[in-house]
Length: 237
Image (cartoon, rainbow, N blue to C red):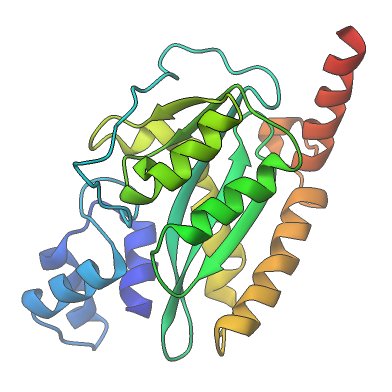
């Protein structure tokens, strides 16, 4: 699963057959069926460049995608979220974030040993303690279409947007964040357990928000872009 996670992050279009062939060339023979079972356990889906850890509940309401042709030019205009797989030494966990689209600022994050909706709701509630977006974008997974999750957004008078089915690039900013987190943090560490991974990820997100400078942000940090622009908008108002 560790090797599959790394190779899938590099080549997200690889399915079970390609991953099985690649593992064999690395000296870890595994049949296509076994790789397929592991991919299902990890929530990895071929072709689309994302980990589809959220499976839609067809009884839940799905909201339209609101970001198409939208010019995103200030903080708190659009927030986005997703879930990704985090490997531990003898098991694995799931990480979710709430991120401001414009500034790439990670407003909140949560780690869980299961894919229950609660940890996604906790991350959302923590982010809403900081501010409130105009639009909140996610995929159509059951965590995000659940009544518990959407009620928090509706009560806060936030417009809900959801990716089109099979359209991973509808949430491209958080997809880019996952690659950054994996290459700069997860793949460089050997998390012993849930608690050590939580501490290390907390330290990384502190670095990511306040020290890591982005070329796309004019070599400023997400924190600088988020708070400077928010303060400017308040002055203009």
